[in-house]
Amino acid sequence: MRRTAAAAHGAAPSGAAAGPDLPAPAAAPAPPEAPAPERERLRTEFPFELPRGYVDESGTVHRDGVMRLSTARDELVPLRDVRVQENPAYLSVVLLGRVITRLGELPMVHDGIVENMFASDLAFLQDFYRQINAEGHTRAGVRCPHCSEPFEVELGGSRLGES
Image (tube, rainbow, N blue to C red; front, side, top):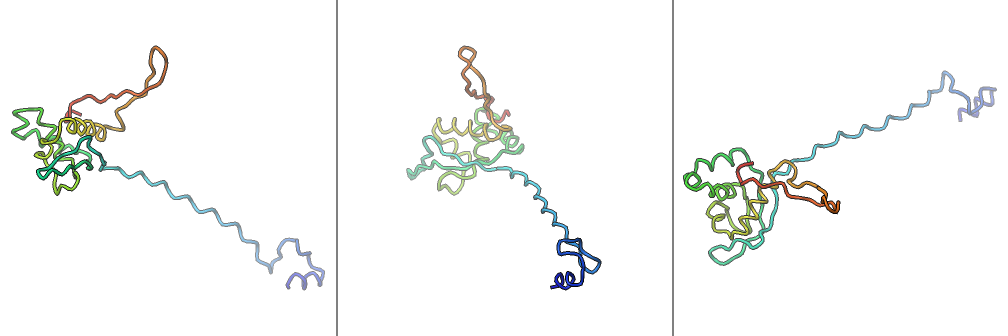
């Protein structure tokens, strides 16, 4: 309504700049700042499935489990274990008993469970331990020197507990 009244009195046409009694048009609001990207949360637990499975005393097979990342303490404490001092090969059994947090429906996982696993499951768990505790992954992309075809090779090869 004000424009028609102003135009009737010979004031500036409706498209003209605002006068002293008219408010200046508001500036467009600044776009909201994008939130800072969240750091990716560190995964500390990794699910696995045993190739054969652990068979408990009642005959139940337990295949699905969870392994957590190892700490320095996990790798140091077994070195004081008499069984490991007498037989260094026992290190992987004690170490895996510390870092496997769940296996099937078992209420608890310990080195006694690990030592009664099939050899193929133990080998699987040793490799899985190396994979999740290595920085990144232990595979590298390479090319065949004869045909130039790309493929991946596994670089991990150290014994468990010697990472």
